[in-house]
Length: 160
Image 1 (cartoon, rainbow, N blue to C red):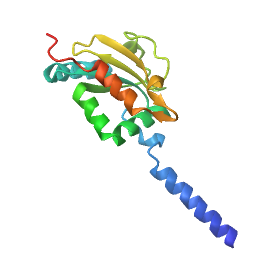
Image 2: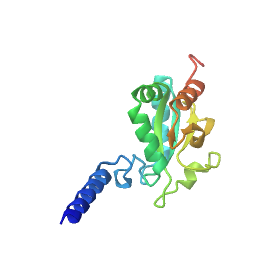
Image 3: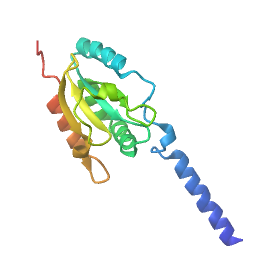
């Protein structure tokens, strides 16, 4: 009976951990396969121009563990999240079995892995292609690497 009780406690703990894990695939991270990235980019360009920001395209999918990890990392580091929001208008472009968005992504350099970031100016012109593997540290992400990315690719004052 004691073995059965211990087994049930362990099973309950595993179930609770799985239910509360921020990396559950079914929670997703906002990559909508039905979204129109062309329309999303047009909307982002208007906001970026009005707010003097660049655009950050996040390419990935709800299936991608590193995409979920990146979103969780940004959300847990509020100063990083604030710095990203101050410099960029972010949009997510889904790459999944449901929709690879090949027509949209054909205008950009090949993506070596997911998530992947593209930095565009407010007019939608590509400024930088960022392999997020370069932003990693161990089994997570580096706050300093993200802050360097922001510092390098945030708009620089009045560029008109």
